[in-house]
Length: 193
Image (cartoon, rainbow, N blue to C red; front, side, top):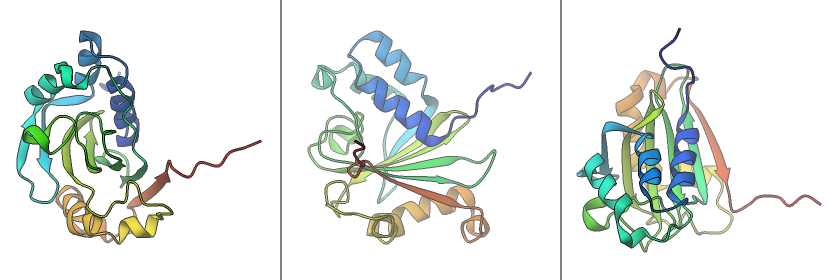
C-alpha cells in the first residue's frame, strides 16, 4: 500500500488552511492547522528571503487572542503553479488587508496585517514546506480588472516568485513546456440566474 493515499496540491492545502483558520480559536483549530504544515516549515520574507519564523511562531499566532474571534481568510486572486507528478506545487495568493491566514510581516513575520499581502506557498508531500510573505506593493489584491498577464508581468512575480520557482524546479524545467500556471480571480465570479 502506498505511503500517501492522496496527493494534495498547493491549492487544496492552502484552501484547507484558510477554511480552518476562519473556523474558531480553539485547540482543535490549532491541531487542524498544524496538520497542514511540515514540522520544519519556514516563513520567509518574499523580497529578501529573510527567515521570519517557523512552526513554533505559527502555533503562537494561532493561539493568540489577537486573532480571536476568527475571521475569514480569503485571497482575492491566485496563481496555481505545477510542473508534473511528484514535484512541489505552488500557490501565489494575493490577500486584501486583514484577510491572510495569520501570516504577515508584522511581529517577526506572523500575525495580523493591515496591508495587502502576497503569500507564496510551496506544497510537497501533502503539506506546506515553505511560505514566503510580502506586502502587496502593486495592489494586485484590490485593483479592479487584474488579469493573469498583469500578475505575471508584476514586479513581485518577475522579481521574487520566479526566483523561488527557479530554486525549486531549475532553469530547464522553468523554460520547458511542462510548467502550468492557472489564474483564479475570486473578485470576478459570474452570477448565474
